Image 1 (cartoon, rainbow, N blue to C red):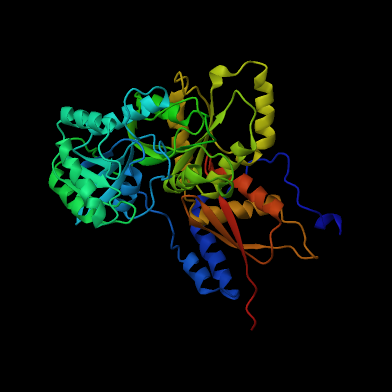
Image 2 (spheres, helix red, strand yellow):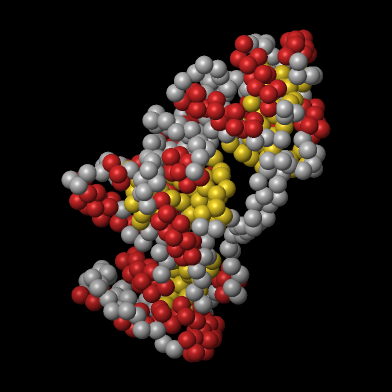
Length: 500
């Protein structure tokens, strides 16, 4: 192979690309597009050239929906009931107590009426540590609800803890619907009838697992829920969704609590405290955001089991629902393979990225040079992501998070006019042509941006482009047009001339 056909090596430094006058962009675009008439193009190519973007619509408006909280002691089937009401497996369920820890909200609907459904952790008395904080979150859920479904295990009957929950519910003054769960057949209805003794009215016999009796329960729920919520949050149009992701115990829940200024989610030194994604609306510098706390990503999903397996799936779903992800890394300890995997998971999902180095207050001076070396070696694929150094515990530099989020989202939404894009590529190829391949040099015939969120570019060429040359194009795109904090993809469609 000759020297001119050698592997393309990205230049160490480049002068800025000098773009032609924008006034000529339209003429250039028409000329290049006309040149494509000589090449074989499929229906998909023609649709792309017509400019049909596949942008996702994240805009929306909300209203204050009635809030229904599902409460009860541990392992009575609250999350199973929540999944049954939703009609899908959304809440993490496992056959052991204490799986749900935070209060988690879901949009729900029954008989044409929409409401917000809140799953809670098991409520217990005289507990300490993480169990006490779980119970506190359940009490907050009751206080912020318009009505409550109290779930009791009919096969066990009323317990001392259930009696304590009843007293708590009476003090709250909220309408209560009593759910006698685990009634799988007519024989269990006698067990349900004994729950009249709780003094909360009629117990509705239900099998959350099989769906038996849930229709009657929900009819009673609609009677209890007010038409106008006293506690629902009115969402402004289109708040941007931010997923807080990272491996366990890097401080995701602590950061959410600090941003909110309240103990919204359970925080504990035990890794893996969060199981379900937790959404919360917050206003920062006058701008509304929806922050989503997620379960820590422990390892590859197929290597997990039980609650951790379903928590991992829900974390992936939360990333895909979000627009930007804040990847938290523990600055005080060495970067791990898990950290790198989390970053890659966000990039693969096509979400905007901000890298937050948490626990900066715990990092000593000896650690800093090692961290910089790790970043240079392990996170080379996200040099374009904004970086913030913070302490979620103390709030140090937390105010720098919003500007970084705004920069990443602006890049994620960026669209380059087709004429400007082709002018850029023309200038770039003139400065650094593609190396020869088999004695031929691939040409870029035309380029268009197929979509935003994330930006996706398609190049029509006469031959395959070297991966190194694609990386060069990506780097110069970022340098010329920004794209700080957003992944971008460059697709190549090799097209041949029509046979005459």
